Image 1 (cartoon, helix red, strand yellow):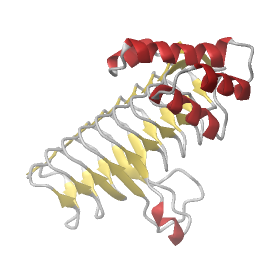
Image 2 (cartoon, one colour):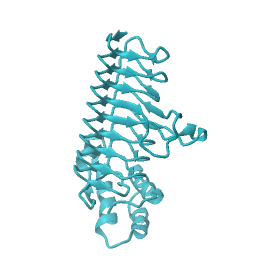
Image 3 (cartoon, one colour):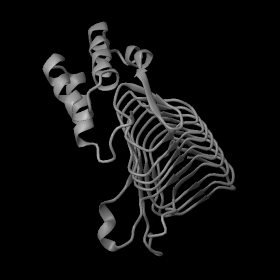
Length: 262
């Protein structure tokens, strides 16, 4: 192991042999870190935290730290799970799950694979972040936010508690998100509004011209007709051919607890 002599690592922490830990980093007892991960200087990794393979964690990041939720009970250690190939830049903070009782052991803050968290971004307690997500500088996720795969969030954006960001959504910088962001769409502003399909993101994610055309039709019916949400969903099911994009969009809107941003 490439462990700098100033790093403080609990003897019970599980650190793969190929992990590199740079100066003045602290790794607590219940942490496990997978192969080829590099942990930068002045980091703190604590809680019941598992980190996968080939992650890059830059200076000052704090991972698995105590939840900022005031319901958290002292003495209980929250959980955090991070996958593989993530880049966690300088001073990113990722909070462990809230534990208000011993019965909360199922709760977890989770991050998938191939994500980028830019400087000073924050993932609060009990958030679930999927794969291939990009959070730009100073993006803030409040507690219990779900971010689905391939979402991009512009800098200085705040996401309200319990919001869901649908797959391949793009959230513009300095946006205040208080309702769910439908999949495949661009949202921005304060108050937030949907500006159209995320055409560039869809193309980069491999959706062909036909699929992108169907997403445009979803957008026109939901956002450019005079139909309310229930009527728009019925019209989408009538007029858009059966496909993954339609099913993903309709199911997302129907199960939204906070309602979708319009």
